[in-house]
Image (cartoon, rainbow, N blue to C red; front, side, top):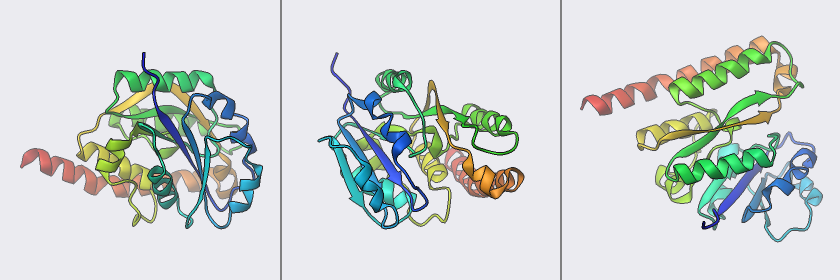
Length: 230
């Protein structure tokens, strides 16, 4: 069986203070062809924490997750891209299940179930259930669920929208829906930090996120329905 060619793109935002949790997981990515860390000016000092590894590529671009992920994608020489948040936690089991999912549906947009670390505040189990229910029933996962797709599909969709003030990952999923790309659940779970809920407040941040995604989704639903009707 031909090995899968996968590059991992990891944006490093201006509020990050360490690469340590992700660096501890690089051992699980031994079969990844490229591991691309995309820094911004405020986080570039963290580059010194990276180990020596010929597969590791570093870039520095303007701050903004969409701009950083698009820049990383431009350096990919592999067949598939896995966009991974810096605070995501995974093991070899998730890596293997991702590869199995890609073999089953190489033209799809693959994502993981979501779980939160215990660094948040409030009933995060409710956010976990809501995110996984939204993904399963509406096929609307968000970026912290680890999007992975073929490079040619990413290029066909035009990358992450740079003009979105928020929710570039949500809009990218809608681009996939409009482009006829299937959303595929790998069956595995990624764990991500919930620290924003501690600093902002659980209720305030939960309501804000719900408002944002519903506001973005409403015109997208209309466009999808309009395309089917006409």
